[in-house]
Length: 179
Image 1 (cartoon, rainbow, N blue to C red):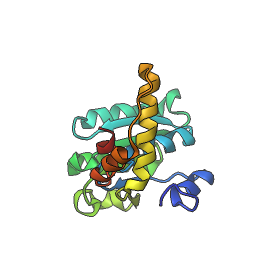
Image 2 (image 1 turned 120 degrees about the vertical axis):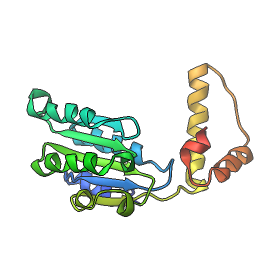
Image 3 (image 1 turned 180 degrees about the vertical axis):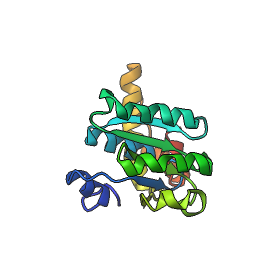
Image 4 (image 1 turned 45 degrees about the vertical axis):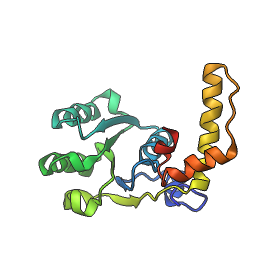
């Protein structure tokens, strides 16, 4: 619904329009993958941090690069699990978003309207990622099997019923299905 033929993210990328974004939705629905695709398409310098382990100094170190030659193409900062940044850490991003030094893509599995600072939300477009249907997970499992076979020089097969069962048991979480 976001990257499909009529998807808003696809249209934004086609028009070369970048905005600050917050992705929210259940685990394994493609939030990090989407940010990576957008980063590749944008041509910007891509930095990825996880708010569960990053600190404010990590963010400042990345932002400092916007002031030198390495920041020439612009900086796209992806913060995974942004709900784990406290209010002060989230507030520190505002100055750099407003000045255009960084473009932010943040992701969360929690409702951003409860866990993300209001002033940050007001400067971002919020996109909801939905659980992935078992039908849509199935091709991913087939590709994974092909990749494992190539990687290990094997020619293993799986019954379609077994992969359908795995896809259904994943409850919309592609990562869980692959695991």
